[in-house]
Amino acid sequence: MKPKTSLQKQVAALSATLRPITATQEKWAYRHCIEHFAYRTNSGTMTCSDCGHVWKGKKGNLCDTIAGCKCPNCGTELKVKDTRKRTHKETAYFSVITAHKGFQVIRVSQITSESRKGEVRQLYCQEVVQRWISPEGKVTDMALLRGFTFHYCDCWSYWSDMEIRPHNPLYDDVVAWSDVYPRMSVIPQLKRNGFKGDFHGISPIRLFKALLADPRMETLMKAGEIEEMKYFLSNPCNADEFWASYLIAKRHCYHINNIGMWCDYLRMLKNLGQDLRNPKNICPEDFIEAHDRLSRMIEDRRRREREDAERRRTEERLLREKENEEQFKALKSKFFGLVISDNEISVKVLESIEEYCQEGNTQHICVFSSSYYLKKNTLVLSARIGDTIIETVEVDLQTLKVVQCHGKYNKDTEYHKRIIDLVNSNARLIKERMTA
Image (cartoon, rainbow, N blue to C red):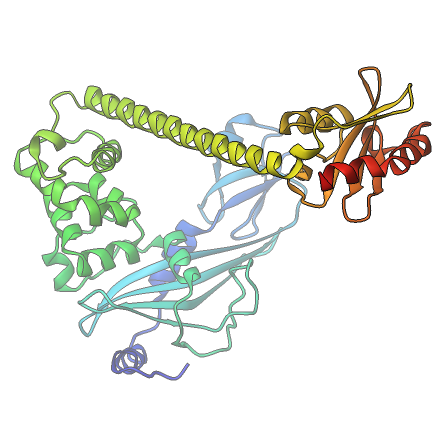
């Protein structure tokens, strides 16, 4: 990518003046980043993966498997592998950290090892990424091109040029994965801000950016509060919210045993509306007891909120049911008491919303869930023999004809046609109620 900003142009120009990765650095990487092992066959024959030397070892020696061995030819310390495999390919990364013309530079190289049993190991080294960090903590990336893939990280185009590239999260990953060459040089600003050569298990790029761009991390590094620094780096939102409280606690010489739990405690205080800058709140004498007390208070509040919400929902439901009942009565009360019978089957009007609910549950139909009781031009009747529901009948009040008549699970019974004829033949009774 062509450099566009003045910073990118400066970095691109300076990158061309960097010296290549040295043979000493490559030798260190081969020694520390690549696995060195001896192939051992069932007969006990050993083969060095580095120089290809073959010698006779002890068959199935457990001590060699655990402690390893040394090649008699090249003197390399080797792990022992009982295998018939004849080839081995391995890829790893290492970083060289250097200062160049006022920039902190992290140079990441890929090393590839190709080993074939009985032959000298073939080793290759290629610089793939450069992370240029300005004294203000701004990062500019230079890298080789990569193949179009989302899952495989080692697909660098080795014949491309080292150029300015848009930031790719993979660049952070290869720095985090790589071993760091022990001899490094850093810019004065990093030394001033507390860096003394120890990364404390933090990725170099992440630590350098934080020390140069975030005064809070500089404060923690200089104070030796490494665990707190690592926590706030991983939880930047908590650093933004609770930094002032942290300074107050330190000013009062309060010892924080677990920064994660302490920040959780502060968040509970915040949720309860407490003052996060009051030392009495943020520096409890018995932290565990205070933490548990706030947990109980939060849980009690949530329980009350759930109860209040449930009570409001119940009140709203009862209000809706009351309104529905009034609307239902206004629509259907004129039909209450209407019964059509042929001396065996009686067809009666459903006279309450509760009866609609019972009808729907008994027959497994949607007469209640679909709110048939609020349909203006519909009258629902229940056809029964004694107290047993046979079918549920829907009558269209505009045509006075049966439009639906079904039994349990919306299936027709042996009385189906008889019920329809009974209701249709007595439609005048429904009409009389409508005109009364």
